[in-house]
Amino acid sequence: MIRATRITALAVTLLSLFLWSSQTVTLASPSATECFKNPELQGCPTPDSESDSLGSPVDPENEDAVESTPSLLWNIIKLIFALFFILALIYGLLKFFNNRNIVFSKNRTMENLGGMNLAPNRSIQAVRVGKQVFILGVGESIELITEVTDRETKDALVKQEDQQGMDTAFGFEKWIDKFKKTKNSSTPPSNVQFQQLFETQLKDMKNKRQRLTKQQEDRGDE
Picture 1 (tube, helix red, strand yellow):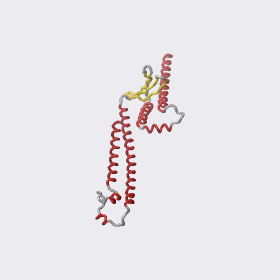
Picture 2 (cartoon, helix red, strand yellow):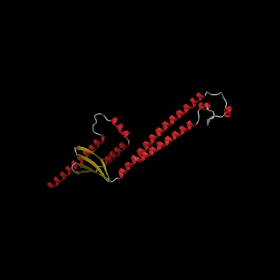
Picture 3 (tube, helix red, strand yellow):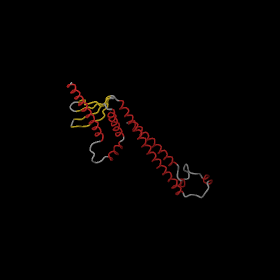
Picture 4 (cartoon, helix red, strand yellow):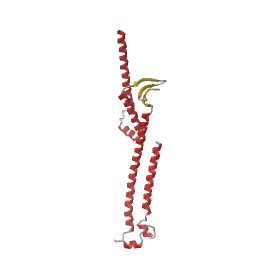
């Protein structure tokens, strides 16, 4: 992220130098009023060139006003284009580094996919170890609750973590989401989704235990 900031600062500096140089070139040529007051200034037409020109003489003040108006308009247009270029550059750099961080996080051996608080100093966490995803209970000690074996559930947890990374990198998306939320919603969407996934896993564990208990009872009857 520091490298992206340096690149952005360099781009802003180059654009500022470009605009300043064009402004200097524009101001370097003397106006008609200055040439009228001091004909010996560099860049002013000589008497010979004036004798060769055709047409009636023009008022110096009117000519100065005509020349300054297009120059000011052109500078404003350049500033607008420079502003759009800087914003596009910042957006592109942030997106590039965020995608690189996502790829780097996927290549890590261990990763915390999120969690949910159940009580004070009591929470559950989803942890990815390689290609396996485990649900851990965190309290006075850390206990393994279950392993997520469902493919869709694992993909949903990983996708949720990637989406949270995007929201962190682009703060304006988070502000847009805040305006879309209703006033009555008090639980964040990520926590709701994680809670639904956790409840699904608990139901699966309950069904597995019931099946195992039934199998043991059937064997005992035999």
